[in-house]
Image (cartoon, rainbow over all chains, first blue to last red; front, side, top):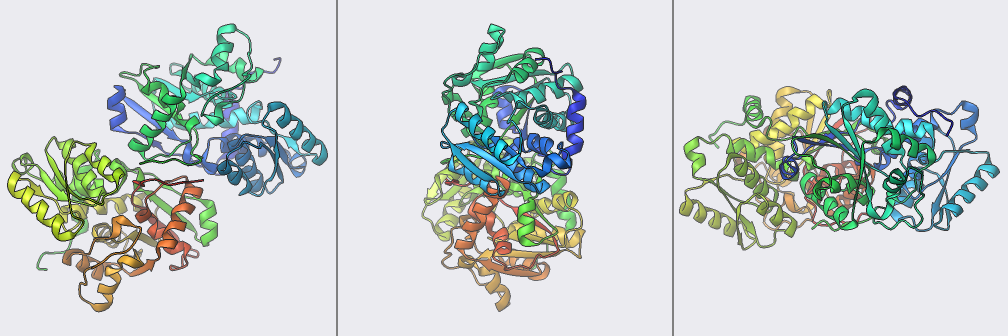
Length: 316
Length: 316
């Protein structure tokens, strides 16, 4: 990595670019959940209510609206297991340009439909990173479209960081901010925003135990890609990039992991307490609180609920 | 009816009573739904994110905190097919008093669980209004508890009206406000708040075609109870009372009806566009827009999403 790390100024610039395009999502609280956890406040930032149902709209809009007119005219391309693809399709439609999205054939029907809705061209491929990257590279070459990586992209990371900026304004004086870790785009933007704006606030990332490359990489001091992720949290199976690993190593205070069973219990508890139907990946940070992996007693905690694109859920 | 109709002052007093106890729920919009409808704005007031997952928390808290200490000490009792029972149980727990809730044996598992969660005593009965009223009267006699009717109660109506007061502040200059009609408590509070605060704003009530007692009563000029309601919108099967009929006749500008099929399509559309999982009753007002029963072209419209206590929903 010779590139500089993202800065608060990058995030503020992204915020200006996407102002009026993404939603200022609400922050919700539950007295029941706060009492159970013994927390002074649990402030859930509801990105499940964001455009395309996920925070990914922020990063995608940030990247698409950072393009010059000449670049934009060529369209955009990406590979994505779901929400980033939908978000890029949405952002491209907003700018009136073409989007090509490579999706693994295992992507859920809800996520495929969510992408197709915005008029993107969807290309299915084998569910391996190599196949996804090859297909996206081929599309970029054929069409001239600009590749927008789901997380290994400065404009995307800056866009994701805008969520934490809003959270800090909506819920002041947080002791702690929690976000899940997949490829590391959200946690990188979050940690950069929080450390830039409120340095005393701790930032903790939460991973599924079956996709714990961030924790293992931090312990080893070197990036260890996730070979065979095994978790219900389909949005968090990606591996860190060198870029996001560098940000996490510098700016994230701690990383904890949760089991799939804990994720499912957390997803259900959030439905019961908040009437928020979120996808398993989005339940991961709260799962760490509920399972006692993080001590939040007496603390004011911000929690990013990342997405609501659940496939199906029996809520009775 | 010799009693006076509810006033804006009653609603403002209720608001002061329940301040800090209920949530100020967010207002959400969707560019996609607005474009489809040709509306200038569709402002969804998300009472599905309210305490106990429904606007009923407002009326219940208004009634419970209007009791004197001596009255409150005797506890409260009601009969309810669901959300009002849960709301009364929640409000009673907040005041630290006992709650007894008569529920029809047909009440959904989710709604029974939602009531039991707050420590209320649940008494099941036959699913007829007569059986419910008899069981509640018996409980009131046995325990001395104060009966709090789901809608035929001035304090309850005033509490429900606080939702529209908030909506008018969060989404100024509305041309039109829509709410569903069941027993008429919400629409009575809504119409009173809107006509008191913004007289030029129209108020339209929406009913399921299979529970259209408000429309038929208005056309006949006399209250016609709903004999055999037949609709998927289980929260809207109740009949108007003389009190709510009187308010509707004076203050509601129009009433339209929607079919169950239209309700289901609206419920799904709201999930897809807003990632809000709501119960069928809550989809009824938007169903009227989607089905073309109300012309909203060019208008700024407020829509109360009444509750999120869906039993189960396949969202894929």
